Image 1 (tube, rainbow over the protein chains, first blue to last red):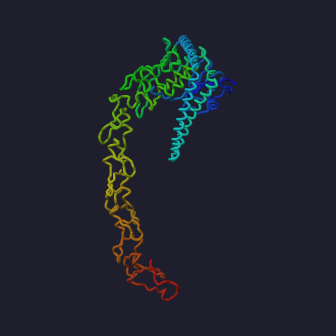
Image 2: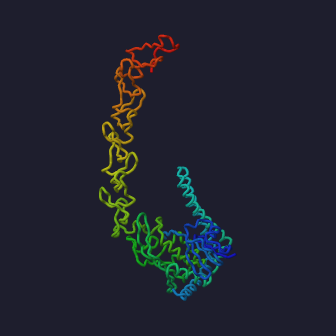
Image 3: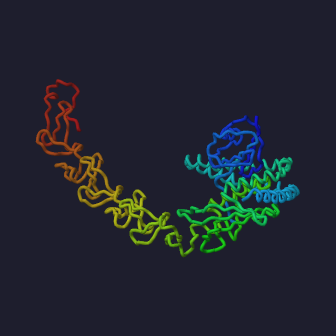
Length: 80
Length: 433
């Protein structure tokens, strides 16, 4: 089993540390733990060595101490 | 940006974050009130969309109803749930527990990720800066080029002052709004970005030390246009002057790129995609004021293609008028009918109604009885006497024998052999048809 952090930039704020099976795909991981449609979000990964990347292929496998971040593709600004 | 600079920046931000988190913990009750109020606003918004959905349901607008359920209602429910969960977490102290002060190494990774995402970052005088790519935003039907921007964040300032104090935006290739040079982006005025929906997202990420999310959120805001709340709307970006590529639409009082405009085929003025109409008949583009709507189909029709009904005088497009096959005048579909005999289109003047069966017949197909000459009849209601050959109406002037079935007029009389010989009992002498 591995520990993966899921951070969602939708205002809920708090990243969750989730225990899951080693090698599980990002798609499956999000299906089980995000509980919503990820179409409106960009997905980025942070590796244990600090490297990061935005991914479009959700079949990418997850390993221990990785972080998955979901960021909305559209955020409305306003007038202050 | 070198790794050494990244460590210096990470170290500076770490100190700021520790102080900020301590202040936030002190202001916890205020935060609970803030999120409780936010939850209330979310629920009010949810109620508003529920009512709109109900309206759609009542009007039988199934597609719109489903769309609202799938998008707005689901989204508002999710947001309200998140805010409520935040209130619960704050009350139970979970948020405080999770406001873990990140290590310098973690912040270093964040800055490294920012450097990679934006293709380079700078750190000078406690300020971390990145450059966006060139940004163009789409307004109503026009694209406005705004150039690239530099996002600056002072890593030494107190987080609790709010993001608008920590972050400022510089236009590197300024294309400000005509009416206000300080507005370089619909959501940036005098370097201050109004975060809107991004405020909550960026602030939450900030308190967790997720600097990359803060910068990418700002980048997303800059790449989007919220037409509900801009400093200057993109439609008015070029003010009254317009740029070289802009044309002015007098109908809506806005400037648009000429790619999205047409010249009115009647008056020659420029007209935008919102105010233009296409003639149903010739497909030319006009101002809505330079064309009329067809009384029959509601489509637009220009002056040259417009047809007027000879009977009712209404304005119609070509496809909604027909010429009467007898008098050749043009009539709208409501004022013309088909002859039940020959199928020709006939106007009110050129048609009659059979006075027996009431069917519509054209003047060519209408028949008259030779006995009662004032009656206009269709061919089904008129026949010939089988004895003398006179054309007479079936209703009054012709009689059919109940025995042999012969049709004769009153003048000729009829003596049926079958009846006279009494071969068939009970047969009447003559039967009216």
